[in-house]
Image (cartoon, rainbow, N blue to C red; front, side):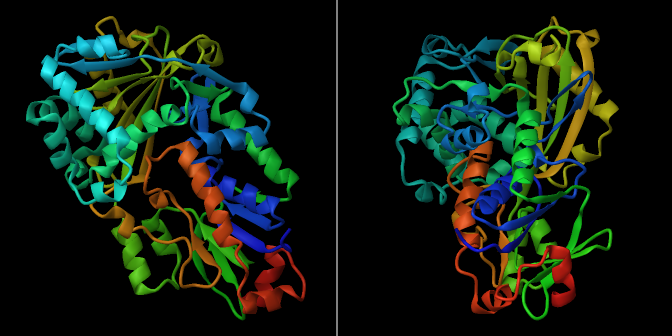
Length: 460
């Protein structure tokens, strides 16, 4: 095992916490600094009415090997509940089930030849291995070529606009490839069908167990610790300043914030590094969570092709047992937007009015009195837009500043953003972080390994 090093991790989302876990298991002395008052980032949980559940929707697949390994290490894999779910599609004012091959072949929004061509597009994408070539092709061009103009206009375009907003025009075909690859992952590993799963208790339970394990390993965790600046400190190492005026120092620092945020925090980065970070375009999300007294239609996902103020409808209790939610039904209504979209400025009341009006249009039996709780999450940095040639723009983990590393979701280049890929990214980044330390840092370690606060006086 490596001798202990002082590692500071900026960001207490699942990425930073997994990074902390794997580094601590290798003998590092780790401190996690999280700006929010709770851990988890996009995977955190919150209070919704009389229940605590995930702030955003997540699902575990049988093929999510990295996440399942983490859950096993935390003693939680046995608490995964697996279910088959159904899929809905709302188009031309009607809700259709698209949960089987037979239903797909009867789908009335497309002619038979168009359905077959759409099926071919999905199958063909599942067989492609050279995803880098797809990075050079606009997603609209690729889908029109394989599915046809009418199918693109009726099916693909509404879905692209729902997931990517106006930014879909700057997106490469690798986005569709990655989405379809995740859908087919279980079959490629020899499993006959894909199942969706969740951990009993949701991510509140996962995060509580993860925090407990980190504490057992001696990891220091600080919430409400917003970092304002990271800079080299004399004679060696890195100084981390918080907005509250606290000064900490570490031999190594890993920043898990999105690239535009990391560029502001890390003052010693070179100008080309800073520009590379600032060029990464992120999409955000405005996501409403609803607790309902009655279910909607029982589809886990309903894709919405008609105009609507949200991306789609995620009826979580098509997967999660209502008993987990005090007998109620949980629905997510997400809207993906650019980080400067005006939707972020809309009040909860305005969003509630527009969202519930659209929900009643899709589900005529829905009534506003069915709503037991309504709450809105707003996050400006969710995932990096996979633009043309994206993999050539991704910032590396190591930087020009000795001991400073950047680990963030922008480095997921051949998959969609999901919890499994977040865990995988963290585990792969640990090897880069804990590579042999530079001689100057090694000489510092030969004296002793003081706690971070003690190291401030020496480095500052």
